[in-house]
Image (cartoon, rainbow, N blue to C red):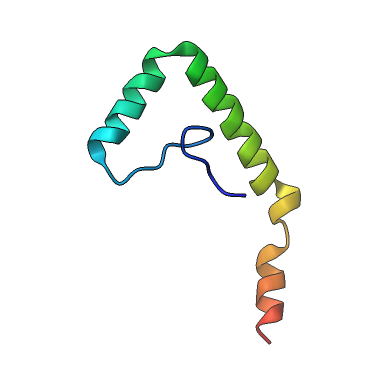
Length: 64
């Protein structure tokens, strides 16, 4: 599962839209807290030491 715009990230190719997202998040304390919680959960779930340790060596071993 990847990032979800509006839940644990903001994804856009439009600079004005990204600025709007940033201002919205800065000005909305509840939204900022929820986004922070969702980001922490996403990182813990996908990039913890347990999830990443050994992946590089496994990848190199698979290339032989």
